[in-house]
Image 1: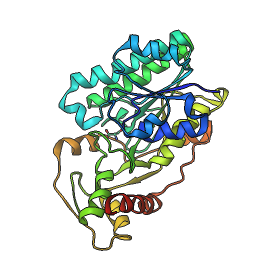
Image 2: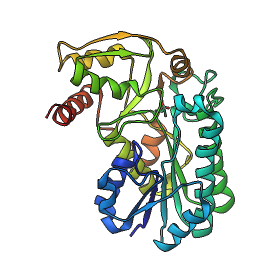
Image 3: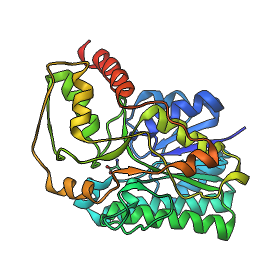
Length: 316
Ligand code: SER
């Protein structure tokens, strides 16, 4: 039986991954932790620890006390927020990962760390972006993600730490808002469509990016950690995607269900240039072949679920 610690459990992914892990592995076997004690009460239905991931001693104590064998590291400042404070981005994104890998080495834990489409840059082939290709990102977020991938590979090869990761695309969800990413428009648009029937998009028409609905992201994180290690040719990190769309396609999908929805544009140059440096669509065949990655949600299926759930949440 796994004994899991989720670090950063109050964030966009953690808020849904933690309950999903508890359902599979048992409530008492999944310890939620976050720097923010004032978080979604769902996280406190099982063991919960207030933890600043930069406090390596406290992290080590929690891992020992709860006899943890698997750590999900979900601590990160996203891309747009990172550009506002690059030093903080380095400190948080790499500091947390470094602490987690060191504790994992000493306590023999497996480690899951998300990488991102942000680990690619303007020199990367943008269409059908291969698993193994040029990674020279020009955002601090991307720099920390590439460094993180390399650090995870290093800990696996040098110390045998079972590190695994995914290059997540933009993740769309209806529980916890993302915190300052370039792909956040694809979440905001649903909230605005339901509340106000209109949305002003900060990315240009024709800006294609990979995206994924949260239930698939959760399955991907759990799936890669459950994968048979003998089948893994890659580890840090697998390209995974579920769909690629631009703002117009997303707007059209929403209009099928909210016909009077309309969208206009006011371009944010920082976010636009980040988006322009990322892939249009990734090739995720390594994930499919090595551990059976297979997403369930396409754009319209996701829109139907998002609008159904958010309408109940926002309009009742
Ligand atoms: N969603 C992230 C961002 O936009 C990409 O991994 O920063």
